[in-house]
Length: 218
Length: 218
DNA sequence: TGTACATCAGTGAACGCGCGTTCACTGATGTAC
DNA sequence: TGTACATCAGTGAACGCGCGTTCACTGATGTAC
View 1 (cartoon, each protein chain N blue to C red):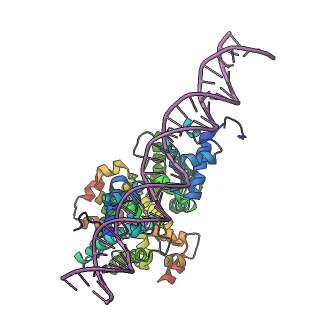
View 2: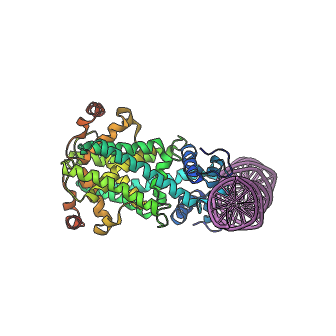
View 3: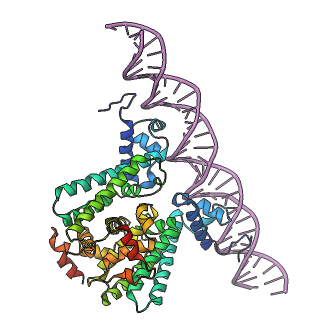
């Protein structure tokens, strides 16, 4: 769409996309406004027409991460409308896949460096929308007897903690290779969720042979 | 012990301590070799006599974090020798308190920036020792019927994920204020652990009024 | 349809900064004799 | 006990770098008439 014109046309979004590429390629410490400008094919001062400072770009990138996640969570809820326990598994899996596919973006998204300021209402809003999706899934799992009855916000924090911790430890390379030799990442995730639910998810899981994997480990 | 002598005497450890102070004060991006040298009262080139590069100092600081945690886990096991479920709660609590009391050190400790290299055997070793402590606690909980029977390494990953996730979300400011107004951090942690155990921890918990807190939320 | 002009997204030079790292050096320490 | 010397932990100047941010500017765009 945008050629080599003087006016770029959609530089703001181009800078966000550039930032995502830099994160994927160079990691979190490699992200700079100057590099984003260069990646977008624009002089290093141009970004200041669209972002007041570096933090504003980081906030936009973080919001983009939440937006990505929100869309996935919504899609999962729609795809498995009457299967709350499957919603739970697939939502968690989407979360872990986000972390795996772009660890630096995942880290930026959930880091607080930006958040404490209230200067980014769009970020706050999409964060809240994400959390609502999680709470909805949790509530429907409780209604279906998949999760214990308890205040859904509290339960959401517990489940989210487990999934977020799993994703974090995974991308930081902290999960023992011994374990990952014996089972797939998805199986390890479902095993973890299984500890939190009242019904056995693993047997209903689509990858099939988790019990065998566990037997091998024992 | 060390005055203003030309030879410092214990510069290596002084640099690690300096690094910890900088982390606490300026956060992860504020950590530099030059600042650590200054904080230790030494010229900015002096650290190179003890660390080959910046990464080596970071690795040492990470190892220090694991050492801290290891000591706490060991102390918990010794203090509650025949109460596995209390070991579980107090170990998790020690972990969360580490994160809360020094978030930047906590992040550095569990970040992989360094770890992939095998150049830091001391770091790898203390990491493994920490994980062993966790596995031991989990295994004794299983033996006591507090946790379901399953390969303890797999169970350890699940529990660790939940606790690590909780600690991470907490220090990134992601846990809803609404929830934290209704219950203490310890209560929220115990609630989470409760979802993972076969017996109710909350009632045996020492802070007492968690059920009331939950009732308030509902 | 054509022209004057306001708007504003971009440019490029310049600023000051802190960083990691190297290098020739120097001062203190401790050991061999 | 005293002296020569090797060792090595520290110094301070210097390197090159990329960064965030500002500033006077310029070129393209679109609107009023």
